[in-house]
Length: 304
Image 1 (cartoon, rainbow, N blue to C red):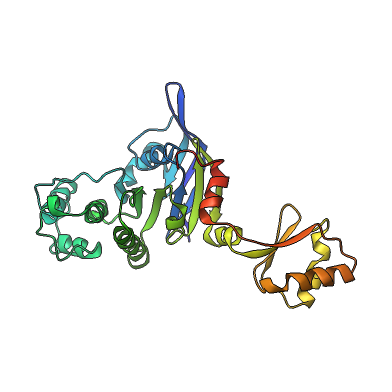
Image 2: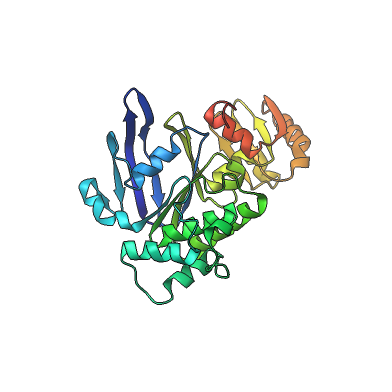
């Protein structure tokens, strides 16, 4: 996958407040990038800068290889749904999309019908938006953002306030768009548990700063149940683990080995290491909930 979006030390200041501070992210084509942070962390401001709605105070954005003033040429390749979708409640879903198509110069036969089907609203296109549930309005908002067939879709808290059924519908819509239409998505949320079901990569943002980036597999490693083995010299234990038939393990930076299989064999591991005179600091079975990991990344539970 090639690079679609790169931000370099992106900063936005409002008088005496810094909303986003030196954020550098790299989003590859085909990814679903989950931007995770509590309310007020800077997620919305970052998305607005990426979408060209707000100018950065400092830093640079490269999209599809274009940066600086040249980036204006490709801003139309970004679909945006930030905060609540702008819909006319007295008009039908079809007419809302028709108005957007007129404004953007899109005039293709069957285009609006296909968009409605894409977001699961094919049967209700003639209904007025005032009759829609919140989840249906969000899906119509996504359809509005898809007008013009963008390469990148920016979504700010699209599941906020939705009931479980609405969340599932949005999730399925986004996964389908990513898989069938090959649309790259950046989606912000303060609910890591839900983002973990769709995102391929994650960026944790707190107080306007990027705290950590990691892939879905790295998040799984950080959160999954595992044997946590702490030793002064972890490399000495690796041949023992190999001899015992362990293959799914990982050495982390602080001298700890995480083992992701045969959790019931922790006692056997300890005995084998002791017999080989390999010192153990501690061995235990550990796991971490997604939300606990999120709280660790942002440094507390306030305003979550």
